[in-house]
Image 1 (cartoon, helix red, strand yellow):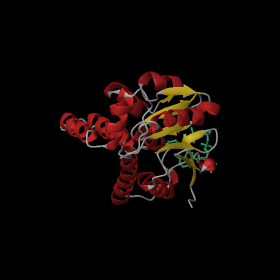
Image 2: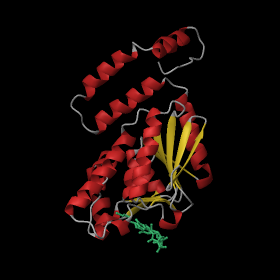
Image 3: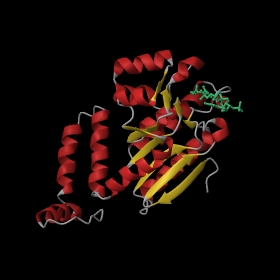
Length: 258
Ligand code: COA
């Protein structure tokens, strides 16, 4: 179905693997295009409750945008490319179902940006993060200047993007870029376990949490009032009646996403 991605649906989680291991899973136009399609599937396919994005092999998550595609580009083509990448990554960030990055190696440039577009990140001990675009006379173009600043704060984001330094998994955790660091063998099982726990919660509540937290991250001035509206909307759902009734009846709720 895809030429640059592997996909596998297991227990409601779609594992999307960027599959160009001989090119460190670099994001060429095809990968961006196919990632967009895979994420559309996450939005619309009712069998999919969540997704994991990871990279093929044991060396790289994604080592950036495909540098070989950059050389002939001028201003118009480059801005169009960045817009396309940002649209796909925004689609990940705004997905109504949880999408997490399982970072299994180098997450550089567009790879770091892809991981940051996900709702949160889990890393293996060999993961390395960085925005080394200035080494190439470039800056991040797939949202990196904005999301890295949101996630780790202005000072550290400035230093990482100006120095092009990489940080290892433990430092990334200390910075707040990743939530958990595990061995490579434990990476996908850990991501899947977290998602299984989330699958037990009310799906409409999960999608509203994503939207509200994204409002906060973007400093949306309507963040607080949107929270009030979404809180109110929960009271119109069957799942809220089920959740509160189940608590009173001392039983586990069975949510339907309605
Ligand atoms: N775009 C295109 N090709 C890439 C790539 C990228 N971002 N990253 C790696 N590759 C290719 C290499 O060109 C090489 O291809 P080849 O075998 O045909 O020569 C192959 O992947 C393996 O990479 P290599 O550099 O030989 O591996 P390494 O283990 O020595 O180094 C990295 C790994 C990730 C440190 C190094 O590949 C690198 O610095 N990549 C670029 C990172 C970057 O600047 N990203 C931001 C892009 S905007």
